[in-house]
Length: 423
Ligand SMILES: Cc1cc2nc3c(=O)[nH]c(=O)nc-3n(C[C@H](O)[C@H](O)[C@H](O)COP(=O)(O)OP(=O)(O)OC[C@H]3O[C@@H](n4cnc5c(N)ncnc54)[C@H](O)[C@@H]3O)c2cc1C
Image (spheres, rainbow, N blue to C red):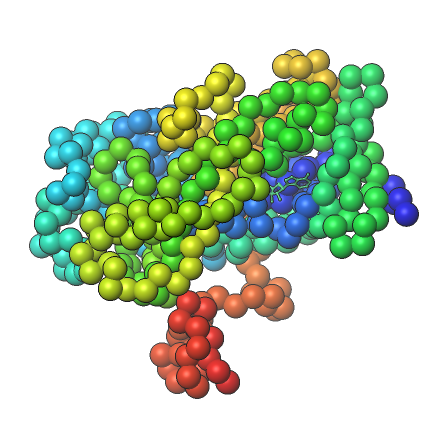
């Protein structure tokens, strides 16, 4: 059976970028619809490390991205406070790091406008007693920990309030084209097998690491370098501050406190297929070894589980084998000027932290193409948190931890990670 629908703008991809674009479109008064092949945030947005960057990580290597991260970090704290835990961040120089990097790091943060403060080591160890006592320097920056599901569902909720439609489990199988113009898509319902045809005035490709596959359906080549990264959740929240090694970005150099656990990550490996999420033994072992450099007792804690995500890195010209060298910046591609295909725009690259800016740039491009002037308001709009709508579809671990600590969640603990009791 085939169903036909129509919309003004169709967005492909239900990760943070696509949802950000949908929310922005709907708020600017466009009739908009989003298609996601699985559930919301089951792509990279639900498989990332959870760090709301201050920009510190990119300050030395990529100052432009660093500035963008800091500006967006400040905005997101305002518009989605319910999804952010203000852990603060520390960059620490261990005996394994180049001592000269500390100075470069502090200078680069200052030049990018990122607030940075050096801490005495005694103060560092007072704040985070499990850290390596041989750390020689420590810098505090405004990193934070962010819950992607809370954020993505708030964006979807906000978009629906402005009249947008979100269709999950609809995989786009074809872009419909007529005379060098994309006119809509054909999608398949993954649950019923039903075919859906959607006619659209414009299609926005926000499929992250899969954006190259979508662009190919319109005969456009978009070179995405899928960079796989593995993370491991440990059974204990060893730190309350987000810890980064103070060196050039490398494997296993960030420890993020999330609820009751701490997550160490990541690796960075180029893969040919963004659906290749296999985790190799060496990747988990490397995370454990690197964790030990930050926290000497790291391996005495228990790894609970490992998962992988794929970075949607964009590179026009062929990249080398090192995915860490590909920019974390983003780009909006107008396929009319680039490839001679009208009615089709792709948003590629970027970070979770910069999703709002990516959405703003994309919708600005849509407005430019449609010759309409509708200013972006997402930097000043509070997103609707779940509990304002009474129905809680998933619980927050913080709340369960509070209940557990106050005797309101009795019974034997059978899952330390999710704080599930036998009762
Ligand atoms: C290991 C790792 C750690 C990271 N850590 C951080 C971090 O700490 N902080 C940070 O800021 N950034 C981080 N990032 C980067 C960040 O996670 C991504 O940039 C961001 O989540 C990408 O979001 P997206 O919406 O563009 O892509 P995605 O979330 O992947 O969304 C794309 C969606 O498109 C859907 N899709 C694909 N094909 C189709 C189709 N045919 N039809 C319909 N839908 C389709 C997919 O199912 C997917 O849900 C990390 C990335 C990785 C891999």
